Length: 358
Image (cartoon, rainbow, N blue to C red; front, side):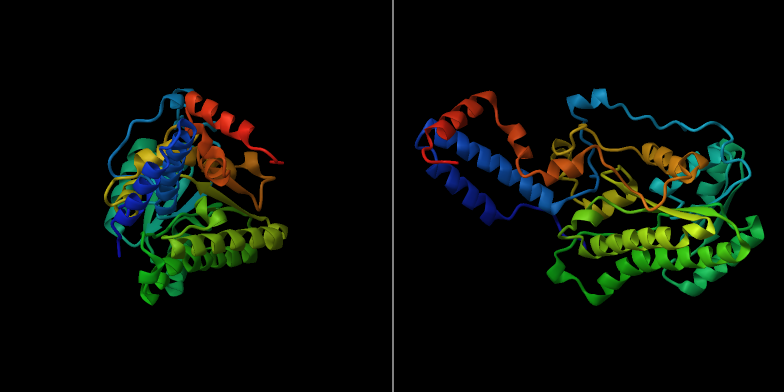
């Protein structure tokens, strides 16, 4: 189902022809260069919204002003006596969030389909932090499997204080190539899996009179939508609606629900599924004002804060965490940053020479 991400030859031919025809004056030439740059960037943006690449590109120069801090920012022991349940906890962001929670004193339960990967992660984190990390197999798409998993966890640790729904699936594909099974696979993991897990746990917490903090990891294109990842965009938007709705309804039971929308974070799983050719990282960096990709530890720090008592008044919040990528892509004139000072002078002459404009 992976689609090779290349610029169609017809676009290149069309753009080149337009550029040649525009070389009649210095002013027109400057405008044509600008159009060419805008085209290239807009095409990259449409192909690839928020995912990291296989081949690493160096960060841009401005990134020195925005150094990543991945060490735990909260006080040691602030999660002592707490139980945290993390889906998709064996790899990537899930592993990073589990590691930070464990460092801060939480007893963690990580869940996904691959028990061998989970167990290795659990052993490694526990050896680093000295706190227990349990591995429990779970296919979030199966509500009966969710019930069995929660039964198992309740026997191990009791009901959790922190629930992080991080399990996800995604791939890039033209939407006209999507099969019903492809659509169902992603929406079952992302939307149904989050719903099954959250509802099963919340009902038990309500029954026991126990409060808890729920967190969902979505993406910045859950807000905007995005072509070529339509099942993921739709499912993630559904997760956000679910959590905002439950925040309104179930605060009275001591439950709060929040969301993080990460921008491009370098993780192994996203590399292989979302940029199999490794061609677009430079294009991504050019549209991130901070000039670098995010780090998993940065998301982990934000997540632990949002699940901690320091954020007890936060519920129904959607936090965008993307180095400014969303606002850069949203503003239709932001690509003017690529215009050189000489090109600005030419364009200003064109603007001043235009009569009757308002």
